[in-house]
Amino acid sequence: MAEPIQIQPNIHCEPCKECGARPVIAQNRKGFMVTCPTSKKHYATAPGLVNIDEWNRFNKKSPLLTSNPYNSKAS
Image (cartoon, rainbow, N blue to C red):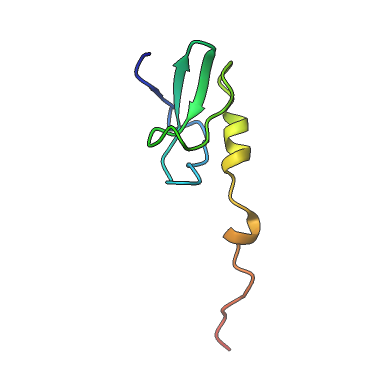
């Protein structure tokens, strides 16, 4: 189809879990979808309206993995 559309920088989008790339909006015959620009094998939302919330929910990193449970203060 057409070239993917870049999502504006002021719109919050989680990076792709697999490669860390910022998602783009692609169009197919069934509608628009938010997808990874690097690989078609990475996650893409269902075709239809642009659903950035679904993309963010799927690609959100677990708070357990991103937070530091230990305080490294010198005593």
